[in-house]
Image (cartoon, rainbow, N blue to C red; front, side, top):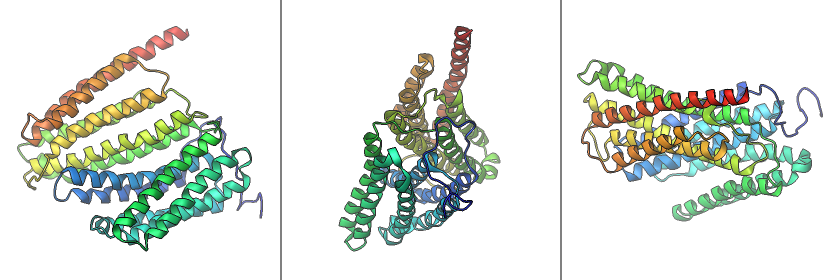
Length: 393
């Protein structure tokens, strides 16, 4: 069947489409990633230290990478036919499967998680094989995407029959082939691939909303215990920190004033750079939850103070968000970005070389600095936009 209601033509989406928004199916599959990301917080059940932060970052990368691949495929080749919908809806099951295997992964048992990941790769291989048959001038691009996933799948299948040490090596090499495929795919087409900037930026903004939602869950889960304690103000301060993170990310149209279309450098700076932005928000949310547990007296602290992690994560968020925006945007008001860089370095420095000894002090100082920065951000963007509007008239 061709060109009917069930199977529609596959061609790359135009970067000139008007009002292209996230689809219902994209919003639906995001729910699976909400559950997955909330599940990996188990890593910190015994507290924060170098190892747990590393494990969390790697598990977060796993979920981010799955989401990232399907998000960019949809941006380029969403034709909304029945096979496409079934493929995306099927994705939810293995994502939930990986989330259910977090405890086993931490114990070094990867077998089931690998099977779920392989099923995700098979979905992508099927989707890109559909593109390959109709790719026309983007044939080289499709070949490298598909080739990267095929090589990765073979290596990961092989890893199932190896010892744990070699299993990890094969998985890493497979993952690197998945990373390399898109880079070569863009290179072979000389970066001339249309990308709908508004759609991509909106999708990444929605993922940020998911992570900020996890931060709100941290507030909610500690609401009664903290609001009735002598440290009730820490709950309010934590809430304001989350509001400031939202404001800095979403102020001034996300701060992205550049088209990503047909520009490989901007695509990869934006797409891969968002990982660090997301990771910092996720860590801030988990650290806030642990900080609130601590000030309410419901948990003892082991390792690094969660307040330190909040401060460091907020600083890292400001730094990485600003770096991504500076790389991809044509508007770079220095009175916005210079204070951001200075404040981010200050927050990271105070967290890494702490002079404070209690969680509540880290939260209070983080809020003070973040609030000052947010006020400056609002004021400077307003002045910048006003000056631009005057120049245009």
